[in-house]
Length: 188
Ligand SMILES: Nc1ncnc2c1ncn2[C@@H]1O[C@H](COP(=O)(O)OP(=O)(O)OP(=O)(O)O)[C@@H](O)[C@H]1O
Ligand SMILES: O=C(O)C1=C[C@@H](O)[C@@H](O)[C@H](O)C1
Ligand SMILES: [Mg+2]
Image (cartoon, rainbow, N blue to C red; front, top):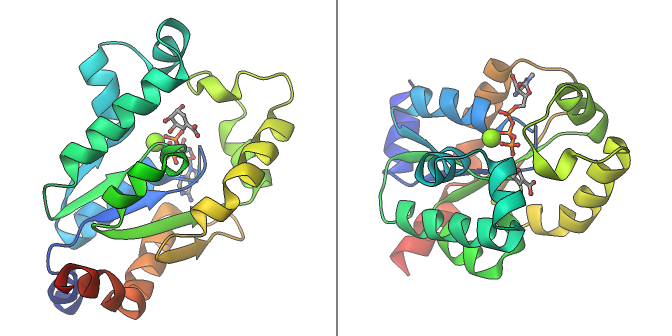
């Protein structure tokens, strides 16, 4: 890894936000390796703690209960440093979550609905996609959330089919340009 990025980061956590299928888990894993951070996925932490898949949590306990678990996990992880954190697609919905996210650098993976659809067409694990009109559902979720995702520190637009490795390279190149902001947040 480029030592200068490591010095710039100073252990600041990297939070990946974005729609279902935008690649938070996939990219987060690779990005963590690239900057020598540990990787955490809030969805995976919840699944392990609950002992059941997210779709079951939605059915048995409901979405509000899932959102509360998600906030609890985020509150716990933001106490640590040197983490790359893949969040759930809906993490941006609760105002309290932003106070946790802003402890670190927030990176939005902005992927067009057409690519999301292609990636998620066979997926049965995401409860909010169990809708006959997946395209419409994804579009309305993105419309609802667009202004929230836009509050990220770093906007990574994925305009074509690119490999996860290419996206990680783009993120690493863009980080120095925005890093001043979160470090200043710590110093204030
Ligand atoms: N260039 C790419 N970058 C990231 N993921 C990709 C890419 N191409 C294909 N994929 C695939 O897209 C799928 C969705 O990615 P992933 O599970 O990482 O998304 P996510 O943002 O974590 O979704 P969720 O919010 O539902 O957890 C995976 O099967 C992944 O392999
Ligand atoms: O976009 C969403 O609201 C979700 C995305 C997934 O990461 C999971 O957190 C869950 O399926 C909800
Ligand atoms: Mg994920």
